[in-house]
Amino acid sequence: MQGKKEYQEKLFANFQLSERVPAHNFYRRLKQVLDLDFLYLLTRPYYGESGQKSIDPIVFFKLCLVGYLENIISDRDLIQHSGMRLDILFFLGYDIDEPLPWHSTISRTRQLYPEAVFEEVFTKIFSMCVEKGMVSGHTQAIDSAPIKANASMDTLELKVPKEDLEAHLYNIRHISLMDKKK
Image (cartoon, rainbow, N blue to C red):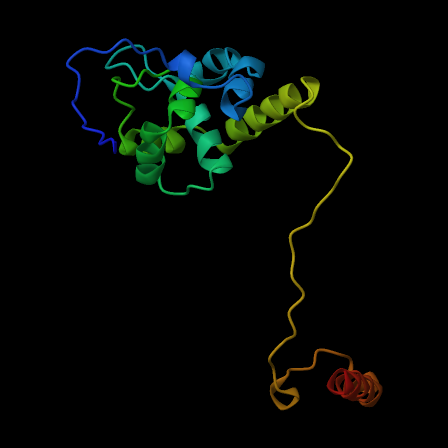
């Protein structure tokens, strides 16, 4: 007999996020490796003594890391994406019914810290990952693509001494001919 799944939303549910994120999940492993308590001391000079509480600096930098790892450049998209992923919520320390910070809070906090803070945080996080064996140094990769220039030889401006002009033009023409033969 064919079954048919009927969805009935529960009013109450017994749910623990930690049970839903597998032990081998990247963000679960990253949460175990990173001890970001140093951020409180590092970022304290950029806050006042009164007013509303800000976003937790650990949450902010974890969101920045998620944005980098997930290749998300929009703060709005980052918050939306993070809210839909159980592993990221677990990494951030948020429960499924707990609202994430507003996207504009992320933007304002990013403007609050100078570049030196970001560099120090990156260096410390990278060091922690290396120490825990999450990063190894046996392979290097450089992202580049050689692209031939689409320029006319007639419109080029030569910036060479005039006495070497004829030799320089000869070399350029020779290289250009070799490129055309390829």
